[in-house]
Length: 165
Image (cartoon, rainbow, N blue to C red):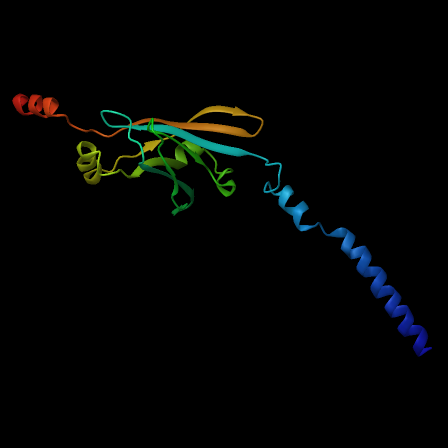
């Protein structure tokens, strides 16, 4: 009877293991169900441009979002191109924030020093801008911050300002 019990136990254990294994999803299946596979469930992109008197290329622009009560995400950064434009791809864990327009803001965090007219005003200011939904189709949302203007002063505008005083 002892051998019968052992054989029954082994048969039940191995048979049960194969049944249990069928109930679990593979790592790839779990990733796809959570939106991390080849087929993303959603994408969120933030676009905008950075201008002084001309487009500011090579500047770092970042977005930060309120993720809950007294909580904020890390800065998600992008670099402006030759036309001063940037595109930030929001990580998937931030896609489900309600009222993204109210929860996130975009801010320039670094301006190259060769934009000296803008650099001084940038370093002393706290310029940030909200975002606005532009398009939403098939799980792909596009927001824009519009144009962020750094107030650079040419010699003419600073002279005009001095004469107004």
